[in-house]
Length: 68
Image 1 (spheres, rainbow, N blue to C red):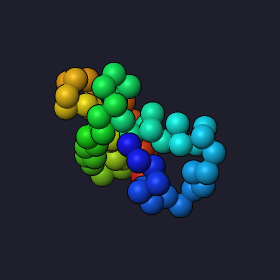
Image 2 (cartoon, rainbow, N blue to C red):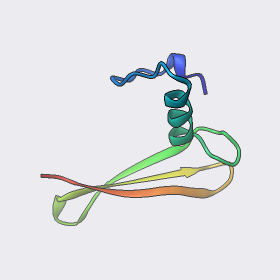
Image 3 (tube, rainbow, N blue to C red):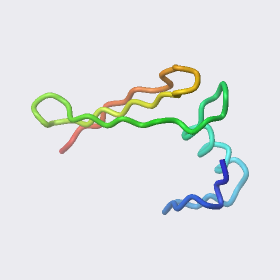
Image 4 (cartoon, helix red, strand yellow):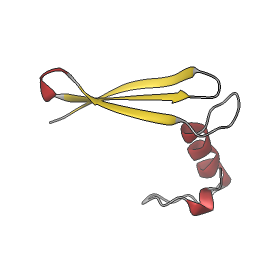
C-alpha cells in the first residue's frame, strides 16, 4: 500500500505511523487491502465496523462505535 497516496488529517510522517496505517488497512497475512463493512446497530445507537480480507477469507476486526 502506498501511503503517500492516502489522504489523512493526522500526520503520517514517521515510519511508525506509516506502519500502523498499513497494519490497519491491509491484511496481515497477504497484504491485500481490507474490505470494510459498516452497519447500523440496534435502535440506531451504534455503528458496527467489520474488516475482512477477501483473498484470505479472514475477518480481522469487529468494532462497535456508539453514537451520542
